[in-house]
Image (cartoon, rainbow, N blue to C red; front, top):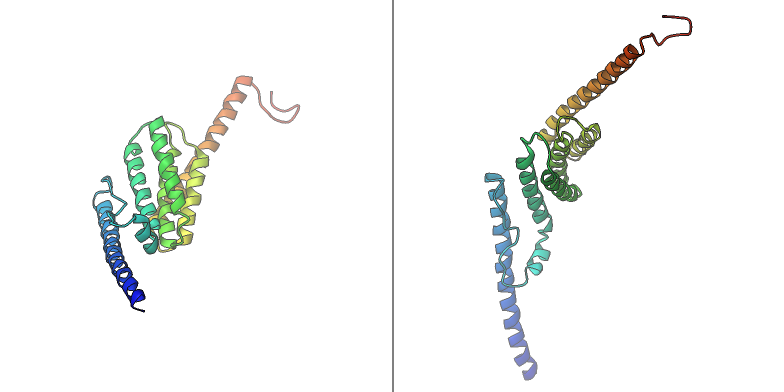
Length: 210
């Protein structure tokens, strides 16, 4: 009995120390995520740490708190900000621009599967912004990407009907898609008229025209 008590005492001390260290690491995670979130909103282009300074292996406290989703969201927002800032005023997209856009889009696509509807909606909305930007690589417009952007925004509104920025982007994208379709129809019609003019005749029923 005495021997068991002698063994139990140091084990209890070790366990107590581990619990104190774990509590410290949990507080460090809370502080890091709160600071990163504030820094991200105050200075979107600034860098965030995304990982807390811990005494024990950080995976232990990270797993207990379930902070992976928060880290993934902050990292995706950071990539979005970098890609948007680099391409916002570009007249033509460069290979480096595409690298930034594709990297941010991949990160946001992962967050769009987050179990939180609000966070997933925000990710879809930001994803739609980047895809829409990619739809205008230069002087032309890629209708397929405008349509893809529209689908992303529709998903954002479906997941969070109270997401006002997403609803505004939805209305804008619908207008752009209508304008793109109209412009393409007019272009095709002009091409047809030009082709008929080059042939020097009227494309009608046999025996009609000249």
